[in-house]
Image (cartoon, rainbow, N blue to C red):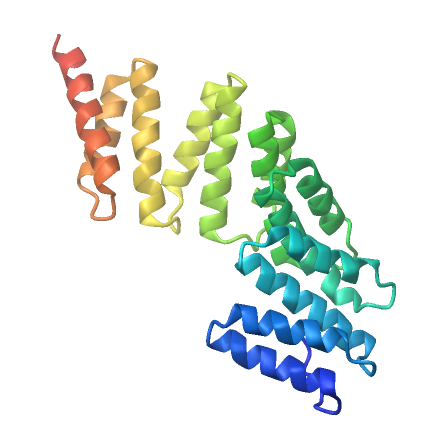
Length: 253
């Protein structure tokens, strides 16, 4: 948010609320934002900042309904700063998702993606979140399309690409495209910059998939790789051990 000169009561309250946030006094900060909105000389920019910050603070406090009401106020203000809009829509979508309003969340991500001059970061997050929500709702084709958009953005981080490939693989598998699912898992494993922990758990799932397809040699190779990785969880190590034992038994039978 922009720095507003301390020239009126509202700006003093904004500064005090920020100090309270620094010491995790969320209730105290919200109380100051409430007071600021009652100041007769509060400017439009200050009002936008108060609603933005109070909404964010309410969301941190798990008051997602209250957060949405505050962000609605900014979106309804025709003279509110336009640079806030996509950020507010992103936060409102996340709060709607927390409340189970998935259709409302998707609508907000649609608006984010339709925002002129949207930042690349917001675009990646909007496509990822909308894709995950569509996947949850069973809109597999829509989810795969959104994941494809993420993967087409060069600025997406290695972690974002790995997570997106995994989710697209899940969606493809649910559509019966096992070859596509296997291909996406293999792409993650082949990424030189993918986080090691991502590669480890994807190897577990690819190993299980290979085992299901009858490729016991491929499955054992994946499980062996998992078991020699220094960045693997206890849970995934246990799964790899169990499935490797089964695959070896089948090979030896």
